[in-house]
Structure formats: C-alpha cells, structure tokens
Length: 176
Image (cartoon, rainbow, N blue to C red; front, side, top):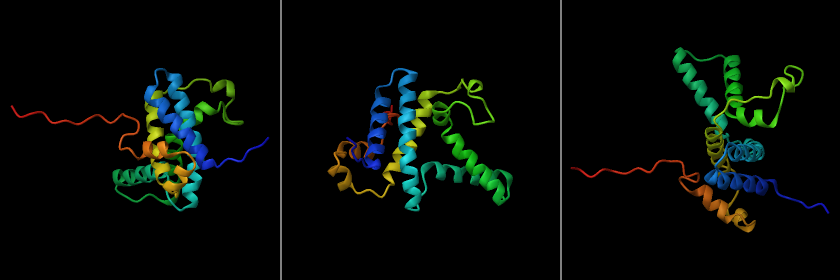
C-alpha cells in the first residue's frame, strides 16, 4: 500500500538522523552517511527556500565569495564572471556529496575514471550539516507544524546554539 509523506518531514528526519549520527560517529563511513543524508535533506529544503524567495546558506556563501573576489581584484565583476564564480562556489560546497552519490560525468568522464575521492569526511560532514541546519531554520515552517508531526525533539535540536557539539567551549582563566 502506498502512503503519502510530507517531504519537509522527510528532510527533517534525514537531517535529524545525520546530526545524531555525526555526534557519535567513529568511522569515515559514519561521516559519509551523514553527508549523504544531509545532502538529500538540502535537496528538499533548497528549492523550498528559493520558492519562498530566501537564499540558502550555500547561495549566501557564493555571494560572499563574489564579494571577496571583487575586493581582491579592486573592481566589480561582470555578469559572466559573477555567474561562473557563483556556480563554481555552489559546486564546491557540495563537492563531496555529489562525488559520493555519482561516478562519472555523462560523456565527459567515465565512471571507471571517477572512482577515487580525496576528502576529510569529518570536515565535509560538519560543513554540510551546518549549512543544512541554517537552511532548515530559515524554512517557512511553523513550530506547530513540526510539533504536530512528531518533530519537536528535532525542532529543539536545531534550535540549539551548537547542535553538532563542535564549537569549543570558551572559558576565562582566573587572574593570577
């Protein structure tokens, strides 16, 4: 029997699973699973943000790269340069995810020539998770919707200042 699912809840489920798995990860495979779950969640949330005329965290990052490039060059970029840098930045931000879910590139790269990946899977998972968390926080979804759909723990988790547990604790030394 076919069931009907709300993709926003599926995205929340995948992101929650990725966060929880990240916090107890011990192997590269654990981090790879986090990357794949998180990337799939972003695949749902990004178009929803776009539809709501909001920018995803990766789009904001790409715009910052453009600003940095313009500053370093001391001039504004033309439209072609802006588009190239923007799309290149988006590809870069999801490079590990895309590389893990695909082998090859159509006719330009054979699958058998695309079997290796160089990555720090911890770092890739952490960066992608932070982007996905920010994106989910910016979705036009009410807290009531999440609560009514059994996602209150997830709502509270992504509302934390450090849902991944990776921000170092700050402390002050006593004066001597």
